[in-house]
Length: 298
Image (cartoon, rainbow, N blue to C red; front, side, top):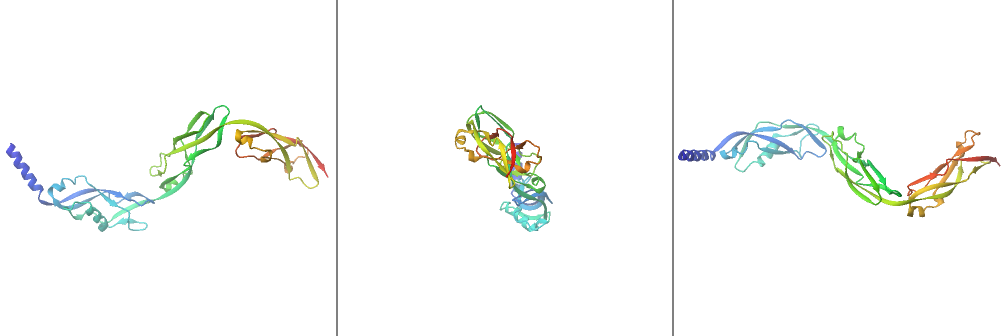
């Protein structure tokens, strides 16, 4: 049995060292698809090739995959790759002792869908709860504040923003930085995103409150008419950080009443509007929303 096994093995090896012609099936893997296109369909996902080579080489071709480069396709609307072009690519991936005699298919055809690149803003879905007498100084920072998405037009053209995951941060009394996930649509199977996370950051400051008195100004008053207001000076409750409050002056505000709002002569009061205020304050609240008036004719 040992001699029989050895002789059989020797015979098998001698046969494998001979030159054979055989058909082999290759799976096709398409690479370097143009960045502005998505491959929807290819006319072939595998191909049969007639090869000439040593017998032992065919043992390795059972499930071999060859790559087909699509970076230089032919055509403007109907895209294809000629037999000459893709045959050369297959030959380059074979060993030096293997010869490609023929391939079963002719031209390879491809269907693509146009890809769209779009930059969309990130919207925070974040709830901040502060400790007593603390507030967010300035705006909440999102880094980055937008992402780039790439996908088929049918998927991408409906996206106008990307939300963050919903998070709640409680008892904030100091500056914070946190990395959170983006809420990326799961049903857009062919769309890619430049980022899947965003960093949020905020500056937390201790705040105080102060009342600032501002004179009310009447606008759109006709010539020959004088509008007397009671009171003509209002207090504004300002809430903000100590440095911002220290630098806030009455001249930073503009409080008005509009004579054109006086449509009914029997009305006893005019609405007051806070027209201008500093950007840095957390909140500004008028002491009253209406003032009494007297119309005098000059």
